[in-house]
Length: 211
Length: 101
Image (cartoon, rainbow over all chains, first blue to last red; front, side, top):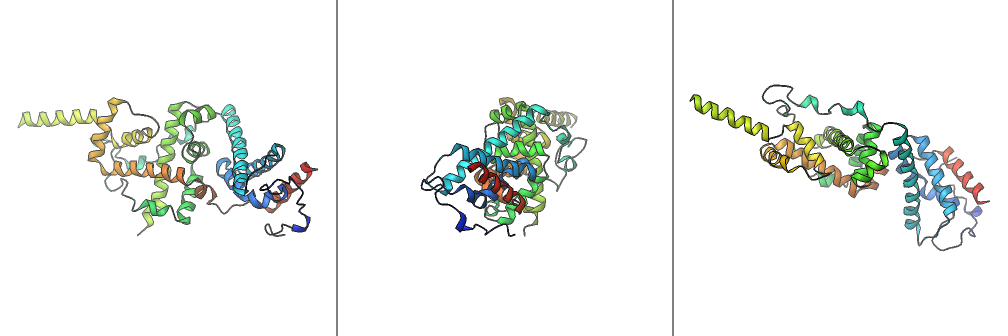
């Protein structure tokens, strides 16, 4: 059976919540399922957990029973519900395990620094970051985002979680620390590692490969 | 001549104390995105960046990462071919149906 296009309009009862703008919950899977799944997948890194989070989101939303003035309002509302599910997951993970990823404390760029002598910890000549040509133009490229997404998937789970919360969702440092139960200095180290690894990955797989 | 060398060595030593290494300059530039740097670290970093194009590039690039991720969360989040599996779709649809009854 094809995953899409099986909306079966005949059996969708238009009575449902009856208010304008709110779509029939039976269509939520088609309308919002993939979007929410990808949202959860990037943040939870586990397809089974992401599926569960999407399911819980829809069920919680049904109970909430709100109405909206359009599809996009409905989508942002569902994202809000899903976000809370994901944060609950992080909170739980922060309580149960140490969120700080010690294994990743190894310095990603170590091999590019002079190991000793007068110039110790300076870039090895020619291995320092060269300029990225018109990075802004990359923002319009689907392949760029695919590359960025792949690079982010290569980060250790906890480091990626920190980067996503702070840089993608734009949550303030202090709130990220409270959510994950880590100290600010741990947060700073993890963000530094995330930025370093992502920068290098994009340099290798995108900017370094252009012209 | 000897004196000149001593002065030179002295200046290098002072600059060395004042100026962070490249490795430290990366960390400081990342931290600067999170909090104001301690005033004692600012002149050294400033001087380092004045002299080191590589670390300047690094700083620009991590700020670009922040801008890109923050201004385009959907492009990043949705840039994966993975989708909800047909089985999960069916299962979720059934749950929704059941909870409406």
